[in-house]
Length: 158
Image 1 (cartoon, rainbow, N blue to C red):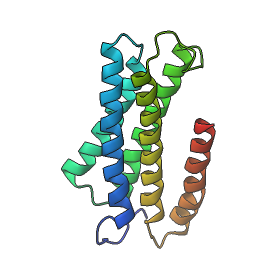
Image 2 (image 1 turned 90 degrees about the horizontal axis):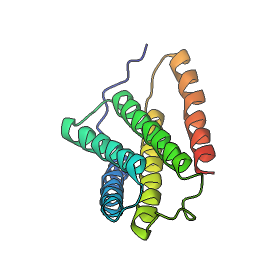
Image 3 (image 1 turned 45 degrees about the horizontal axis):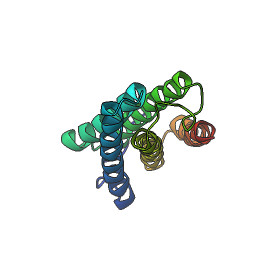
């Protein structure tokens, strides 16, 4: 039922998104670490950045070839990171810019982390849309899941 035909591997867009995730998550981790050293409260954002970076590196290291596996990994990574980012905002009282301990590095790192999490969600949807099955139930599930993930991320970014 959930079988997919053997594919030629990730598309050019999926490869670009993957490298963008690793690059942006690395920058976010660096900026947030500098913010942490300078005294900013960035613990949850830093955890989110590390989760995204680890997800990208795990995918790269183990060369996940199944679109199902990649979609699951990046869906999990992006949503776990989103939860940590929302908890971070909650600890600051909802406003990143008005917090006294917030530095330029921590603010930049936070937004880079948001971008990396969004890119991970985009890559998840890219992999889901690349799945082609003969099962009508699976195709229906994908037809609902793809816009659902997209809609959740629009709400999170808002």
